[in-house]
Length: 253
Length: 216
Figure 1 (tube, chains in turn brown, cyan):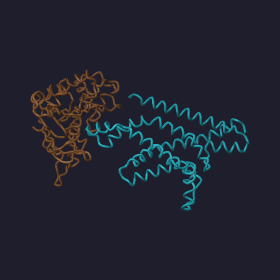
Figure 2: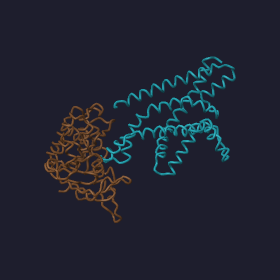
Figure 3: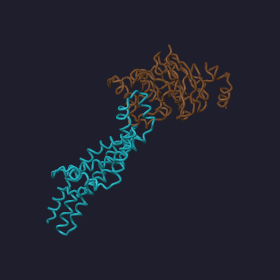
C-alpha cells in the first residue's frame, strides 16, 4: 500500500527554485533515506510533505487521499480544511533540534497532544505515553524537564511524542545533526527498532551509516531534483550519477 | 495634627491608591494582550490604528491623558458627570495607558519565541488557539515577567498622578495636609508607604518568577 505519493512537486522561495519536479513514492513499512548536499532541497521536501511549507504545484497524496493537487491554473490547491486536518494526522515529524516544549515535563510532552488534540482521556493518554517512554528507555525520566536531559534523550522524547499520535508515516529531519557523534548511536538504535516494527519512515540525513543501516530505499537529491535512487547498496556503493559519486566520495575519508 | 491621625488619613488614601493599582492591573493586563494581537495583526488598518494608539499613549503624559478622560466627556459632549466619575476616569485612563505598555511587552515576548515551538505544535495537530494557550503563552509569561515587574512597580508610584483630577488617593491627601500645616512630614510618611508597597510588590513578583523557573 502506498502511504505517500509526491508527484511533480515544485517549490520556490521568491525566485529561488528549491524543488523542481520531485516525484517519489513511499510504501507501507518502507524506510526511505533522503541524502544530498546542503541546499539540495532535502529539508524543504520534508517540510512540504509535513505541511510546514505549502507547495507551489504538484500533488501530495497520503493513503490515496489527496492533500494537494495542481489546479486548473497550474497552482497547487489544498484539500478542504476538514479533510486536510484528517490527512495531517497521518503524518509525524521529528525535528533536528527536537523542539520539545520546555515548560512541559517529559510525560506531558508525550501526552499533551493526545489529550488536547485527540481528546483522549488522561488515563489512556498516560498509558500510551508510559509505554512509549519505556520503549525509548526513558521510564525513569517521566517527570524530568527537557533541559535536564541529554540531547539524545531529548530526541528520544521527541520521537515518543511523535509516535504517541500513531502516525502512518514518520519523517525525520536530520535527527542526529544536533547531537554529539557518540549520541547518534542511540537514535540509530531507536530508528532501527521502529524499522523492524515496519514503521513507515522518511529520514533526511547526513549520516551515510544511517542510510546504509536502516533504509531500504535511498534518494539522492541535488539542486532540487532526484538524480539517483534505489536500494542503499546500489546508490551508496555503486552510484551511477557523477554528482552522487562526487558527493559520496567526500564521505569516504 | 497628631501623628497617628496623619497616618490614618494617609492610610485611607493608600487604600484608594491600592484600588487604582489593582483595578488598573485587572483591566490593563488582559487589554494589553488584545492590543498586542492588534499590533501584530495582518490587517493593515487595525495594525496601524493600534500602532497609533500605542504611540499616543506612550508619547504623551499620563497626567494629561487622565485630564482628557475626566474632562473630555463634559467639554466635548456636555455630558454632566457625577462625582463618582473621578475614580472611574482614573481607572479608564490608567488602564488605557498601561495596556499600551503591556502590549509592547507581550509583543516582545511573543516575538522572542522560537518558530520551532509553533511548528512542533502544528505538526502535532494543535490549532492556533491551543498552540497559543498551551504552548506559547505560558513561555511568554516567564520571559516577560522581569519587564512586567518594572511596569508594576512604576504603577504603584504612578497612582499618585490621580491627584491631577482630585481623586482622594494618598498623594492628594499628603499634599493637602502638608499645605494646610506647612509641614513636610506627610510627604515623608507617604514616601515610606509607597516604598513599603513596592518592597512587597518586588517580593511577590520575585516569588512568582521563582515559581515559574522550574524549567530552563
